[in-house]
Image 1: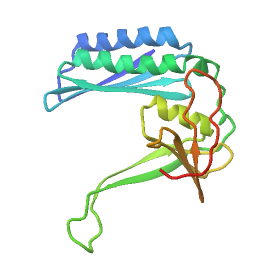
Image 2 (image 1 turned 30 degrees about the horizontal axis):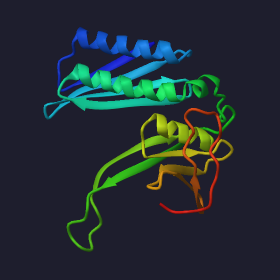
Image 3 (image 1 turned 45 degrees about the horizontal axis):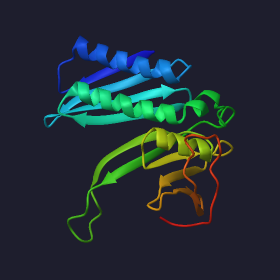
Length: 205
């Protein structure tokens, strides 16, 4: 497994590199058969040690992000979070066959973050903007990917089109699906089973 580690606002040490590699290797060897790659960012911000670990597991990404007053503790907690997710989806990750093998190319999506307008009548100030690729996947894959990344929403495209869809977590415990001209409620992904999500009645968050 290739592990790429970035240090920010702190010194790079072999001890931390070895600790990250050893912890991740144990998790990967236990739950994954496929060759994986990990991108790790270790940073010091306002006296807190942040560990952000992104693991490529086949066609999916798994993320563990934690912070504490000790970098080794942050790394351990981030790895533990990844291990819980891999354990939850172990069988599905190993047996998964992607729905987008013959799908179209990903769609480039741009997003912007706005500051609240301080003056009435003036447009909000753009604080930050970026772009990402909305990858083609089924609704089931999108729900699973969102859960593996510990995100509240995921932007994706359908395998047979370039239409942009969004899945998101609802306050009632279900997941929502937003597609062109429609919004539906989706059952939460079943982490321990291979049952696909079922569509329920339309609803809003």
